[in-house]
Image 1: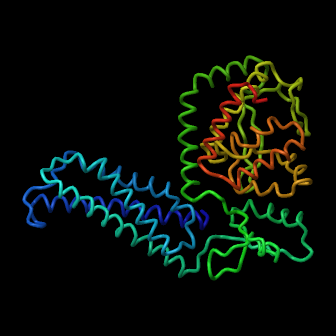
Image 2: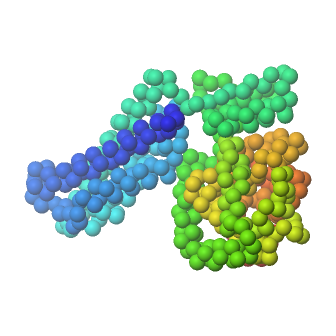
Image 3: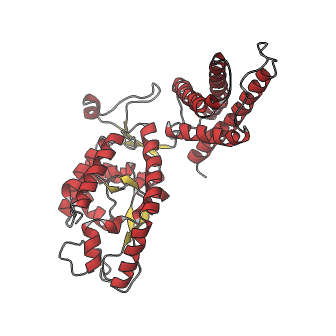
Length: 404
């Protein structure tokens, strides 16, 4: 297990354990108040539900909120002030959520006791959650553990192609990549300072979307993909039967593509061509390609052949919205004209994106380079709002039969 994953796991375990302690402490508080041992109250907050179910659901809810807030995304080198603010906001959401979902159903006579419950729950949540987080953060700093990173020096004899070649070489390591800027980068504002103990730098791997946005995007990918597989399962079965009956060969076509961090993965598609017709050298396809089967042509028109990639999304190899992944053979040709292609490695490839919508099916290297411009623009302006907009455009393309 990498140091990154170990540090993430420390925070996750601490948060789940803290949530259990919080709920038990809150339960004891309610019992003490109910027994009249606190504030002299004789009867208060009689629970109208079973406390053992929330004992499981409460930590699960806490974890979901912490994950969606992006807290676990950068487990190293956390800012103390930012950690306090994040924990405060997360604790507020947890407390209000638990209050309105669970506690509001209690049968009580005095509404003031509702307020006491909310205040006590928030205080317990914030304090008990923050102490272990602070301990882990300070301990990692004491042990000089920082997020694994690589810094690339731009020497005087390094041209643009050599720089991007070095970036592409480092990407598969999954480390943060920093480039020491030249004077031009500093003067134009491309370089910036995030921490006072660092020199100005350009972070190649930094995403424009916020940490919370990245985590919400990933959670949405999983939920939507699972729901789509369930809802579309009859259609998937029909397509599989039609592919099998159309020509000899497997139902699914598995092809190696390059994804996030420049790592390869096997993309899944319904087979749309006759088996074994590509040969040793990869070939691009077009509308009149004789290798395409009749059912394959119909599926391509409405992009139905791409549906098995919902499994790639669930695996974490792809996203619903993101640049289309390519084969290394064609990437090598793209890089000759556009060496900055490797910048796409910072995000997951997608089922659809702005590039395919604007350029359409890419059957030449020049079209791939044209699509790359839109993919770079998408990457630099990533947002959940933009993803929703692209999805609506994609639905329109599919309904119009312009997938090919």
